[in-house]
Length: 326
Image (cartoon, rainbow, N blue to C red; front, side, top):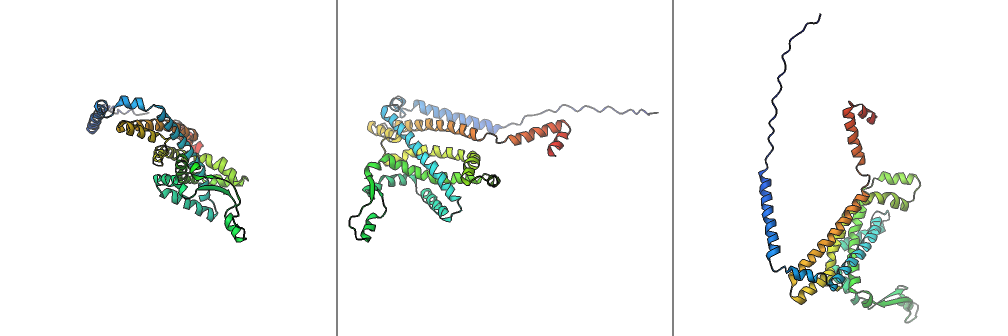
């Protein structure tokens, strides 16, 4: 016969008195930041040196818009040269041929070492080296002299260096060739971030090296390549102002500075340049966001799936976790 024992009823614990953690430092920081913001807004509104009405009236004039078009054209062409040539140099750096690796290393070493302003001015004065640029048989006159033929020329066509090496072309080449050295390192890092097993599996299926690079390696490497490429594009937008020293007249900063010097309103035009670059950078940031979102599709799904599976396993007592582990 069961024996009943009287067990004392367990007393319920008292409710916890939760006291939120106080952060007085945060409120002090907010107050300081609020005062600084108010001072900055007061400066913008009350200081007559900004001359907002004059700035807004001048920054949309036809010469400024023409300079804006020139800046955008310079940005697109320089980045196109940089990306395409950088991809080629990155592949050369990863080649098994030591000569290709050496040439690619020397290229990146030179163009990463020389400042872009120096390159822009240097390319702007290339006409000093050549009066004409001609295409044909190399060393034609030397070959003719070797065989006793005076004034032997085997040149197909040519043009004056002054006509072709304009300020815009010189700035485009300087920025594009310099950018190619940086893009080569970015692309190389992106390619090396892809697991080598991907390449080995593709080679086992009989795919060629170029096909593997285009269809398997590069699409996966784009997730790593796109963010720094976006940063390089924004940096290139700012570096287009360097060609004003070549000089390139069809450029945004050149036109804004010219208006400021002509009207003795230098500071408002500098503020206008700041506003224009902020607007262009904002557009580039939006484009970078959507590119990153596109090339990041599918990334992180496995981690979310494992987390969800662990939650189901915890609710069902661990059976799902065992099945998933098996």
